Image 1 (cartoon, rainbow, N blue to C red):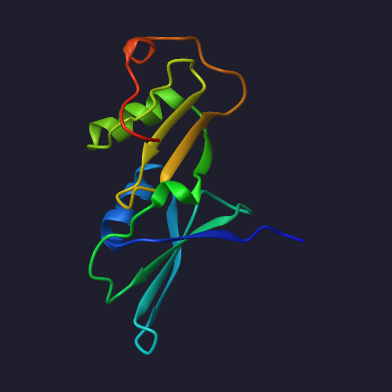
Image 2 (image 1 turned 135 degrees about the horizontal axis):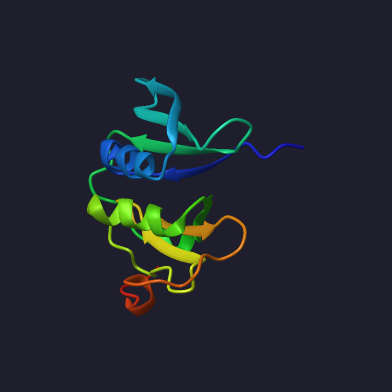
Length: 138
């Protein structure tokens, strides 16, 4: 058995693709279905890794609610501080900062919770992250 992908529904496909590209995911393929009135976009963090499938239903009239009931997506990152700085510099709110040098949470434009975990051992604790409070739901 091989894990293939996780699917999430997105309201604004361009915003979702942009958000996940900030995390380093790259589009591997896209499929538009005129008959089904949807677009599927598959994103990958690299070779031999499970993909993230973004499903955009063309006729959805408002954003999906209850993104938190999904749980979360989790990605290991090489430098949690650098990733969080990059996301913050691009307008993403860090909801649970990496105060411990190991874990942070953000949300996609569709309110999907995304956990970022430092690959390997936690990094040495550093500011401004150590003093930053959590905010919102994550």
